[in-house]
Image (cartoon, rainbow, N blue to C red; front, side, top):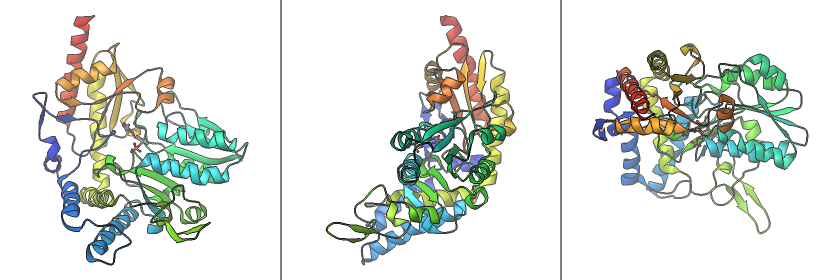
Length: 409
Ligand code: 7TS
């Protein structure tokens, strides 16, 4: 399928915004949804909507089959050994909070260390700060090299025999760097720590094999990979999940409830209290089918080309500061930047008038912004439906922005 055929599957892209054809360059915030996913969710509500795991009636069985079928699609997608290792959550944030509040809160003591990096999203910082506060553990940061990448020497120097948890994003939502999480997992394990991978920006864009990475936990969000909002995944190794206590309690997750105590269902359901996100999970299953049909390797290659093209074209705009490595080989499909002294919100506003959607702000990574010595930045992020033409329009928009503000000042 070429990119123009792919674009045709995303109805939202076929519209004008502010009188100009929409150029959507904010897929790192959330991706657009293909018609297959929209129709799957619509069909679920039109034909089989029912609660799962309870009814004997036919619709209930169909809904349960579709929901559990989606879990099997996720299992295959990340090559987990068993569907017992695949827990549906609200997204990456909930998944990371579950690991912190359940695994880490129970296993960490004063003086133990949690190791993360300066580039983490707030969702992979604050849950660990909270655990550290509660347990007396210490939160340590792997430093970044000048170009924003991580060196394994720095990982070796930061992770010690006291480290219990290492948690790192596979792809940065700001710098675009791809972190060597497989090698970091090896270092974590050599030191007796577990490895948590924040896959929010990698799962949509590259093949992930949890057995090959040998990570203990992986978190990702459906809405960044063509699925609806409100659904995400926590993968965890079975032997760890089995020993963990749920963090939410109520219907669906119990085996027996007595007056003073209760027992939990087996994995994965003990972590899915309440009526689950049924339509979301089924939508995620459809998104996985869609991505598989195109091929994760083809998607990664396409975005890699776009990133290289964007880096080259954007670098030619006078006053452009690009964050992260300039070597496209070290990057995924996004470019974060500032132009001269123009505030990124002004950049985003001028671009919006041209129909171009980019994100401006701190991108939920304030420690990284501090490290970059920038209060805010603008970001263009690409996905399988973006083209070189989108980047040409972005660059034209950036030149316009620069001219507009040089007239003003
Ligand atoms: N981790 C990373 C690396 C992310 O990029 C994000 C969201 C999250 C965690 C949280 O995901 P959620 O689905 O639970 O919200 N990142 C962004 C972004 O870059 N712009 O908007 C959201």
